[in-house]
Image (cartoon, rainbow, N blue to C red; front, side, top):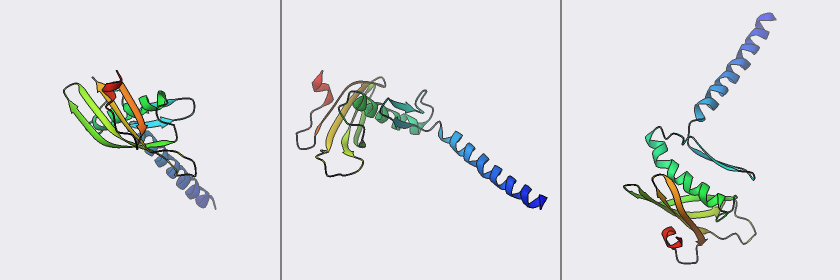
Length: 138
């Protein structure tokens, strides 16, 4: 009976420990965390690998648009344009609600301009209006 309890305890401990290491492994992955109180970009300070170098500017753009309330929190982003030249970086795409509901939540076109990894401007407009570069808002 004691060996059965020990086996059960060891099994539960092993599963818990593997889950903990899985969570610790994901802490460094770039991701956008949202709540009603704050929007936070994690895994991008400092940018440590090629994947982060590719994804982090997109996350900074999304955070800027959410912080300025150009795009509602309940929207997801689909990046369709990601171009950079030297220290300049242009990102654009569409934003849609996570869940298509009965409301009149329009699909939005968005664009951001980054310089040296910092967002300098960003815009979002309903998809039925012609897109306008973010730099035109300066």
